[in-house]
Length: 139
Image (tube, rainbow, N blue to C red):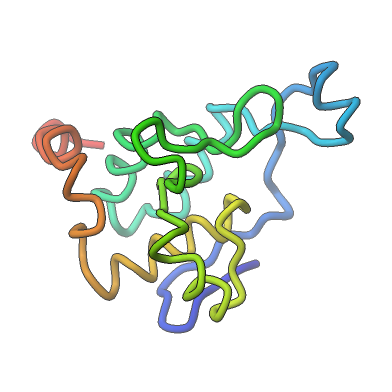
């Protein structure tokens, strides 16, 4: 279980079923999390904040890792990291102080919740044209 001080939810990682093992991930002794698993994890973690589910969809298409097990980085800014595209340049030092590793999916989500509780959706305003319109159609 993880939780950030002030967070209203935690995720139990013991029940997460990880994606298919590929030759690349076996060699690296790492298993990439599938998109469907990542989406399920995001939907469960943010079931109380539906807009954050849509933010994840728009920011990363529910991807945290690539098929080779590396962490998703932003196309425009490679400091944007993981499923919630948290910018390490601006947020990594705070995340570390909170005991969070932004490359870890659960910690990436926990930090996104921390940001949301502090600033609302402002940190994801660049992708608002995508997630803002989807809210009218449901999750």
